[in-house]
Length: 409
Ligand code: GLN
Image 1 (cartoon, rainbow, N blue to C red):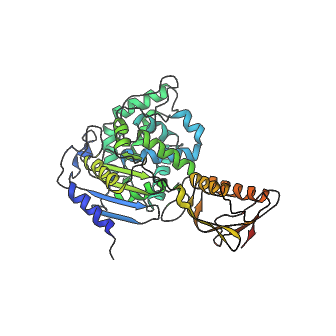
Image 2: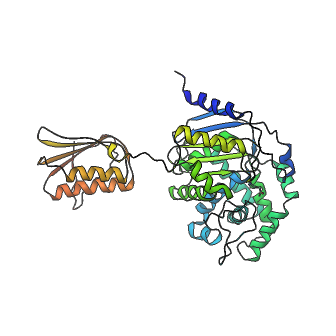
Image 3: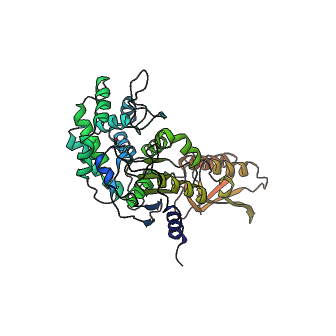
């Protein structure tokens, strides 16, 4: 059998192929030369499989899609507090290149607009070369291949970078950045000129979606906390002054770039990369936005449309040979664990032994684990014998307190 997923993506691509709305960015002279018809889509699941259609090998400059990743690098290097002193997390509702700062603190409102991204770039630390090397290395790790800078795009943007220079001078004036404005904009512009493909974007997004674990290598590239923070800021501000509309209509944390790239990262599911250079008035790829609207509608990918999976973790609860057997399955988080505890509380079998079988459980979240163990501890306190079947060790160190452990079956 051939998977229908690539066929579906091909159908989405074909259905939008004739759409020539919007215009390629022209404020960076080199971007005017882009072929406006190029169009590619790639999806990487958190299991590490990539499906790609169209111009999936075409390179383009990452531009503003570099911002969430530079933010993730700064959070990793500097810690949350230091980053929060430099840049906020509030959606600005403003255009990407607004000369904008927060009232009292003078911090840029968020790291997705240029002011915030320029400040974030300065947090990468060191000389221009060091900051740029850090960005290239980090992005390459995320992409799983060596990335490089499009020097021509970079030079072309630097030649016309007055607005970003104005922003950097403003930031330095208020003490948000210490480095010399020109050097910061030079580094930031190089960071924006790193070339990627839609395949790279999809796998980079999948790493954020996968709680910081690279879906191909299994390496923890950023911490769970950094991935969560980055996705949160993308959800609130990634699409600039269209962020609210995007969150309601599409519901996938995302970031766009003026070269025409669009990255989405759906927590727990997938990363998506799209490239199509014609932009709308917000600076977002016209066909890219449409692809995401289709994916969200057709594949039920809206963040706010989560499945109610609580009750599905309790596979069976019944008395077998005088013992209460509790069979669990799937991924156990708060609501699932609450469901299990409720079933144990309402059990009126009177069985003296309770056997908890987690052999079909894929994973317990931290809170899921603590809640299930607490339930087992309370059963033991009620003088019931507690036994555990856990052939794969999904519930390691099942300490019930007071040095008591369940009987291992
Ligand atoms: N390098 C671009 C700039 O700073 C990035 C903007 C964008 O992609 N929206 O203007």
